Length: 481
Image 1 (tube, rainbow, N blue to C red):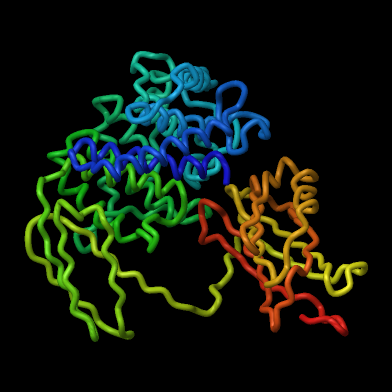
Image 2: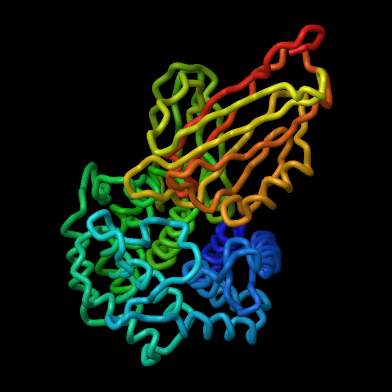
């Protein structure tokens, strides 16, 4: 992983503990588990702290700190101080680094370092806009307790207020930032956002402009910031609208409890925790009865077990499922269906070439694999992306070759990871110029009728931008496939 991915694992623990503490629901076991995760995540994130007190995805290996990631870290560490030991001097130095960010005459922040999420670089109509990023940085500064009177906050606020964009994502960021700043314009911006909402089946969401920057993950982020803005302004008055957004955002959760990507998951979890904290209504006592073919099962949810996930398998498929509920309180029920489908249509965002050859000197044992990819969409650059190589069963990668891939392309291929028979390369960004990774693999165990391997390239923040190809090695006489 990298500094951003570690924060994605770290931050949700804070929101969960804030919620449990505010509603007096934390048990010693759950509290200690969350604290343990936070301490581990905090120590791990310090590995990505640079000598100038900023943070970047790969620490001092990067050319500079990242305005975006440093803001994310500042916000999270400042909130975590309430629960775990955080080095105050180090935190102040990070706040200072961010506070001295260069601003243009409008007060908008000129970012340095990599901005992995394209949504923060503005809508399709204005690709050079720094307003979304400025609002994004303003949020953690305010959440971290930086006084409203400081120059970085007043400048950023001036930038945000001068912006006339009607892009829902930008409006959602602005609405939350201005609500935190207690600016009298916050309500107007929030109403501009709500006026663009789509309401269907009592669920509220936003359609984003078409184009390379539109993604399902960005829709979830937009909804999350809208909830946060509603709760920051007037939780009681806004509870109904927030509940409609919560209904939509909950429907986008995957079977593992996350959403589409990393930033949308963090924002969604913070938003859900904020909503639950402000609308907590006391004791829960609900019985939900699920009826399906060969199944009748009742779930009982009380104060004692409400934080536990209660799963049950459907014994027969296909089936229709009906649910009846009685009692008092709110609960979420999710149906997860896993099945195999024909290979999805590849995205036109990336090209992909895969070459699998037998090493002339390696006989039946040594092989070589090369994967090359480029970005094809009009905006010219991807977000951070991944080349994921799933090896043919029984083969292992040559570690020296993997190190050489990174050594030859340190500005592009930031690092690699090996997990079982999967090799993952983290690519800072793809452009129209092809990026290739090439390495030897060695047969470690002979496998009868080994299935082909595969290579997948995808945008880390827009995973629907994905392309894959399978591969197998040419047959050699006397060798098993």
